[in-house]
Amino acid sequence: MKNLFSLFCKGLVFTLLLGLIGCEGDIGPQGPTGPAGPIGQTGLSGQDGQNGAENCVDCHGNNQLITAKMFQWENSIHYLGGHYDRNEADCAACHTSQGFLDRIASGAMEASADVEDPLPQNCYTCHQIHQTWTGADWALTAQDPVTLWVGGETVDLGAGNQCINCHQPRLRTPAVPTPGVDEMLEITSNFWGPHHGAKGALFTGKGAYEVGSGYVNSSHTTSVENSCITCHMAEAIEGRGAGGHTFRVETEEGDLNLNGCSSIVCHSAGAVPALVESTQAEIQLLLDELNADLKAIGILAPLFGSDRAVKGTWTSVQVGALWNYLYVEEDKSKGVHNAQYAKTLLENSIAALD
Image (cartoon, rainbow, N blue to C red; front, side, top):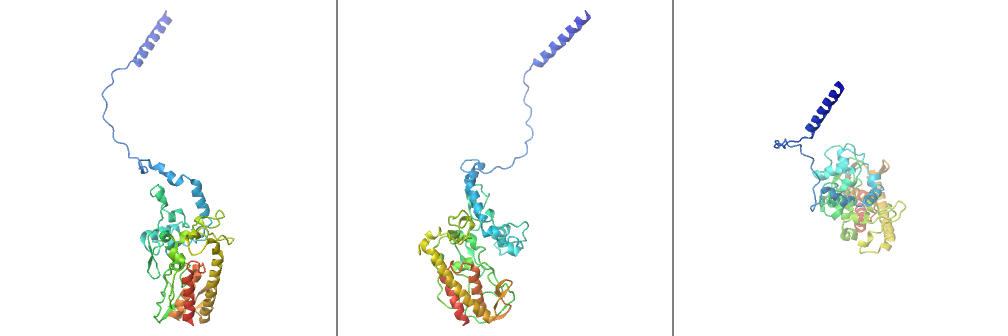
């Protein structure tokens, strides 16, 4: 009897609990609004009503194309031999990616400080990558006309302005002499000269010691739109042998990339190899003659593995002729960049020394 009563009580309690759990009264009034949560990160700005992230396809819609450009760049001198370890402020301005962008932003000739973790020139050096997160990010970082360090003239080479910011002579002491002004000048460094960067200046026919007369620019200067870009970044050949983002005109095997020649109306692409060979041979003969004259004077001598300036006091004509020799020699194209100007410059320099 006791057990039956105990079971009855437990069942009653269980039933009451189920009733309480199942009951639901009226919904009470809504409580006050809680404090606002923290502000989330700003999202990518949209374009034309789209979410910003969708614009990634503007650049990354064809990743094979981006990879191809990087593959070409890895065969460029910018990547392989740009001396990006030269990270001191004065050198880093052109030899490192970070120093170049620093200099372009400030307008100075040097970077504002030595560069830590220096990088060679890369995509971010020349393009405004991830600034707008659209196709506009392919815009160049240095598009404005360039005022040359030597001579102070301003030139506008279109897209080639990106290149000439560094591919130009650096200022030197003594400065390039003024033709017709006879004076004695002292060279205090064996490294006096245009410092490997004469290409942009020779292309434009600027920054040289123009003794004598007869100076004219070739069709490369007067007729080629965007200058450097047209020839050095023409459609690539042999995969990444030359052209594109290799910036090479010639493959390591000596094959010329003629894809940029169609924009030059003076000669057909088929005639270019022979024309290049004859032009370079003529300029090399003039370089050799001027080299011999300068060595006979004593202002040029083999030092540190190449022919360099000799310290001492020299006439302005001797210093000017030395500058012209180094200017054309350091251009490395042997006249191709501006054949008529280079030829006249060397011929007049030889005549001035005589």
